[in-house]
Image (cartoon, rainbow, N blue to C red; front, side):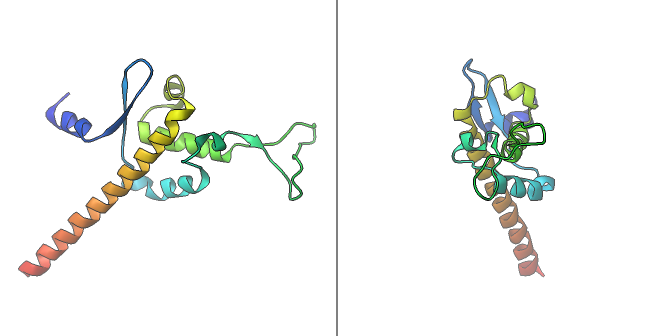
Length: 138
């Protein structure tokens, strides 16, 4: 690991699994900003258990079944949560499913959102500072 990678890791949040291994939480990439915003509108990041697949209901509150009598499940919040976790952890689903438990998910999503907003704010401040400096020099 070079100095730049070490410095970057020193500035990242992390979560420690049950075996003592650190898993870093990365900020959002700018190219993903629209998708991340959309995904966060689909999930409950405060109570991740509410994102688990559940039976779909009709307008009257009855469970929806398909033509074979099977319950139709709404997996949209769960899939959105999993996509956010992939972005935050830079790990594939089959990797983080081995160590991540439902109690940790809220912490990961909170850190991901907080770091992404902070990163965005800092970039805006830097940009505004550069514009301000150009204006003052010009």
